[in-house]
Length: 91
Image (cartoon, rainbow, N blue to C red):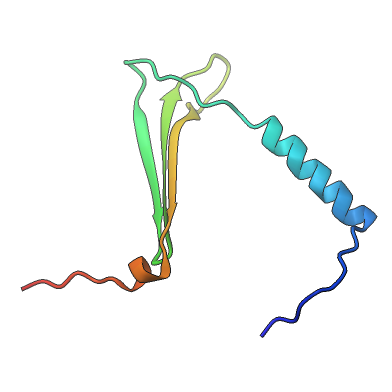
């Protein structure tokens, strides 16, 4: 069982990491709207504890060999312990 920490001390290294995280979260890429002719792909990652989905649009960019993928929608759900234990049965 974890023990209780009575006093939190923020080190310089922890403060730098926190500032980096805040900067990353405040400057993350904005989700784009899709153009009807651009192909869309859906990536799904799932475990017993979580499911995550991201919908991306692919488009060609001048001077690039490969098509670029940009996120247009994402969803993530963490299951409660009760939902993690739920199983469906087939007859």
